[in-house]
Length: 145
Image 1 (cartoon, rainbow, N blue to C red):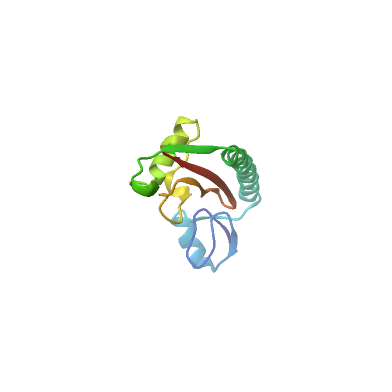
Image 2 (image 1 turned 90 degrees about the vertical axis):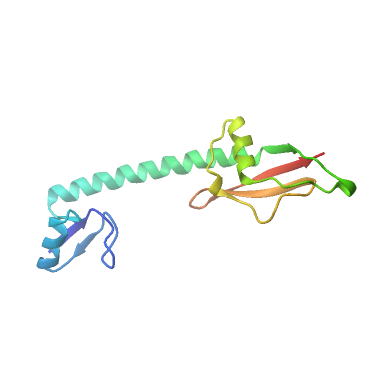
């Protein structure tokens, strides 16, 4: 029996895949709304969903590349308090970076910002922002007195 998976099924396949299963297991998948029987109609619906998903994926990639270009041209300036020998008090967090980006009109989740170590030295520090699967922007963070 050939079925189209509606959900990811462990050790069988991912959503949208067409798999060959035994009749009893196929009936189990169908009755639990994990799959539908492969027919011409269901195959056409699957093809349409795949083409829509592909178009949406391309749109997301295009949008994230635009954001990447915008971020790489940008430098965020942070004024920090310093002590003797230009020692910075505290450090800049991803939450502060997100807040500053939001003020500039860019909305990014703070979990996408990858900081190697604390940003606590005067000058420019580069920070990676993972926007999408293989799209990583490099943002300049500038600490000034």
